[in-house]
Length: 177
Image (cartoon, rainbow, N blue to C red; front, side, top):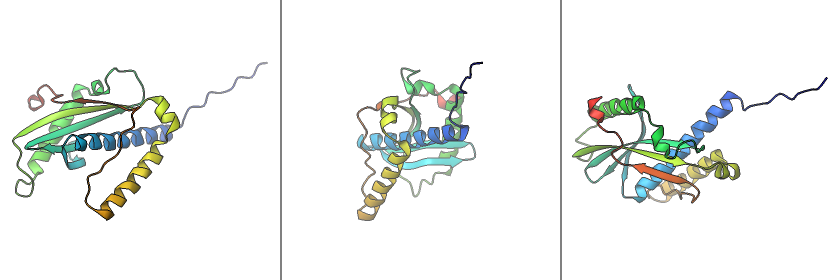
């Protein structure tokens, strides 16, 4: 009688934590990328009754609502394509709630709102040699040092293996939702 070995998969909790950490790291990289492009962070992971907005950035008088999509598998040519219409609708509704709650007297004036998607592809080779939880801990330490020294912008160096796909005006007509 031959014995067969059972295939063990990562427990669900480990997979969930890995995906969550991957998403947090992707949001950190997306924020750094946008700040290097001249955007200013207005809010990160803003939560309202209708959901969460990953990044809310400003550039001049344009408010940019950014959905960040991070993947480690190459099943799509562009990670930004992984944002279904249902998610776009949810983000648009949440942005509407944010705008209602945004205080125009304490916040800079905006003339235009734009919906962007940033897709990040972190190849498996990068993940095999790097622990995302280690990178997040390292990033938190770096941010604490910057905060204690001065009010410098967050400046995370983006590894060359990571591909960033920034799609401006990604939603065709969010206010029609």
